[in-house]
Amino acid sequence: MADGSSFNVNLYIYDLSKGLARQLSPMMLGKQVEGIWHTSIVAYGEEFFYGGGGITSCYPGGTVLGVPDSTVNLGDTEVPRDLFLEYLSSLRESTYSPEKYHLFEHNCNTFSSEVAQFLTGSKIPSYITDLPSEVLATPFGQALRPFLDSVTITPLGNNGMNGYGQR
Image 1 (cartoon, helix red, strand yellow):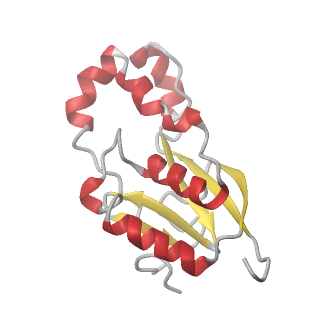
Image 2 (spheres, rainbow, N blue to C red; image 1 turned 30 degrees about the horizontal axis):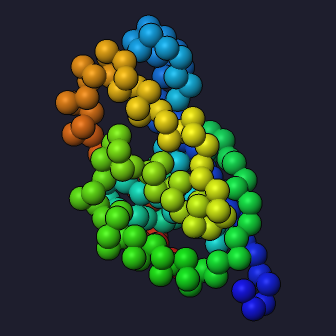
């Protein structure tokens, strides 16, 4: 980048189970699961995420999920904000449109990992991205799969922003 500006990139991690996965997973899955993870990328003063409504953004911590359970600093990016928004627009039209959302195979975590790699060259932690296959590998996960395949998660922002990059 000509002016040498860099922008911090963070991963926001939310446990959708609010601790229940940790308590119930040994009994239900036969193995310990720490949480049911929703992730988003925070950069350029916005929180970007993918769900059943497609790619969306809000002010950091502005989704109905509230404050994240944890934050991981992914490093800095020199990608200009305008180029990033163009990148998101192309993802929205192709890979991450609302109708392509799938709870296990194409979700908020696959989006966060792809965006993190674009911005910083690193993916998000594998304990997050590997969780769906770990759950589905259990008998209980296989029994629940037909129901879970129909679930769509859309954590709308609650700050009045419509879409991403609109300030």
